[in-house]
Amino acid sequence: MINMIQFLEQNPTLVTLLKEKKASLVGVTELEQKAILESYDEELCLNNRIWQ
View 1 (cartoon, rainbow, N blue to C red):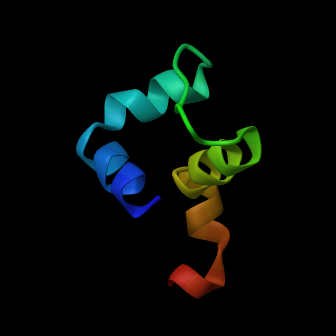
View 2: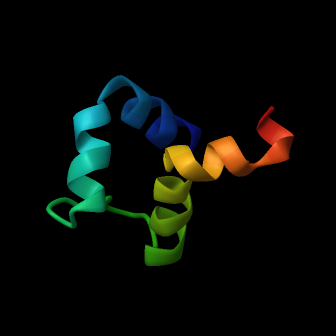
View 3: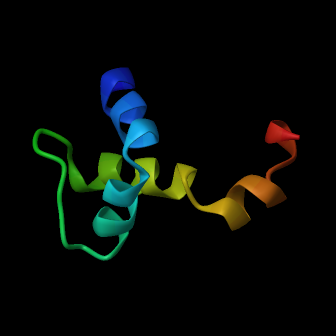
């Protein structure tokens, strides 16, 4: 999973495609993919006190 997140950090355009449902992550469940995409949601990160 860490490798997947590192890959997405290096390829931010893929995050956009995943959010638009134009791509998918092979071997990752829908729930895991949702969690990964939520971690890239800027609004969520800004509102989460743990990250500040």
